[in-house]
Image 1 (cartoon, rainbow, N blue to C red):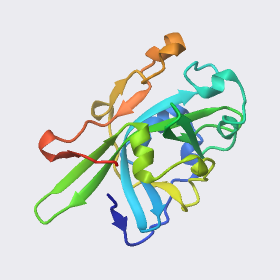
Image 2: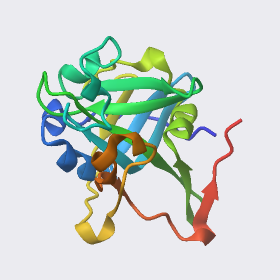
Image 3: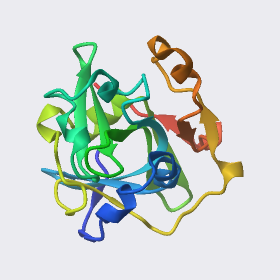
Length: 204
């Protein structure tokens, strides 16, 4: 399913947005729009589920094992994409945060696509980082995109903010190997819309 935008707004979030403490950025990413340029137009989605990975001390963070070819992008400037493959089949999209040489990033776990009709506005929720990347057609070739430039992939602030009472917090998924770090409540989500207005997207 593709929901094109007819015009490019070109107001990407600046690098300064990402150059801040990762947990703060993660919470503020909720409700922001992730825009993807495709061959058939611009695709707009709203971020509803993220996980934070914060520095070399965080045993769930890839950079905890040191600086490698794969994690090099995490040590660079904030605002770049970090894309990797898991289980040999699923790509994961992350956004690099904080200062250079301090490896941190935020995993995009869930998106919403809104469709307007004459009668209603329906929300289609895309859950899981692999499904996110399949929907946005993201693979390893998208690693290292500067998301602050407004080309290929970027983020926009359309004025929506959320207080603590609107944000759900959970432990991160699939990081049991990280010991005590696996218990950190560093997954942040917006609640799903009511079941009557929620549709699952089919990715084939």
